[in-house]
Image (cartoon, rainbow, N blue to C red; front, side, top):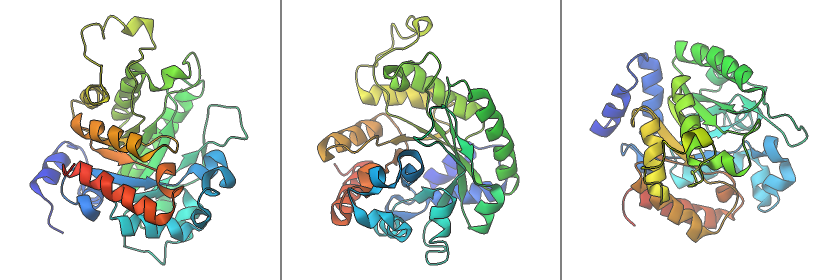
Length: 304
């Protein structure tokens, strides 16, 4: 695998990382149809934990099978597949080496009212499964945010020491943050910046709205143009060490194809590195999902 100039320049931004970690980042960036472009599309399948099997997979019953997601990610030419321990274990042998995997180390579930997540995977698990990276969610704003950050610090240190990349899902919620505030531009930028400060190689946030949640932040945004999603994405990238960290944006809940693709174009135009799309992918029939992902990839290639 010969890395492109674009990928080499991205890797230069991670100045403290060892060759193992940079090699795993390169594996992700050089995989699939977006290989070498600096753009990436990842399939995450942790929704069974978060929402339960029926709410996650009944719209497309094939998705109950862990092998289905491996096959979908590989056939679509994606950069990586992210999932909790059991999902990856169920296909680790059959699909070994065919796509970079990201072990999601913690999860919440809808049976709890706490804005917290349980750690259920380890760095040892990730190494055994041949993963390129580990993933971890933090909830900035939650009453458990500091414990989550401390857990991330320890797991991140261990992951980097053995050459694994670290992906951080930074999802503000809880505390004094309103539901609308969870995707507010000031809160999303804050969350992305926190993930960068905590040492993330790849940051996952939600596409930000134009809402400003914090009164204290309103004066800072007075002269900043956040009128379009592309301009808000550009601000998120600026907040992530001035584009020195890879940032991918979620696809949110199942939505219509046109709305999703319009958002993808604006993420691209704002300089976002890519998308991490779960339910919008696997809740569709496979042929429709592959068609959608092909269009997403074409957008990131600048074809439409």
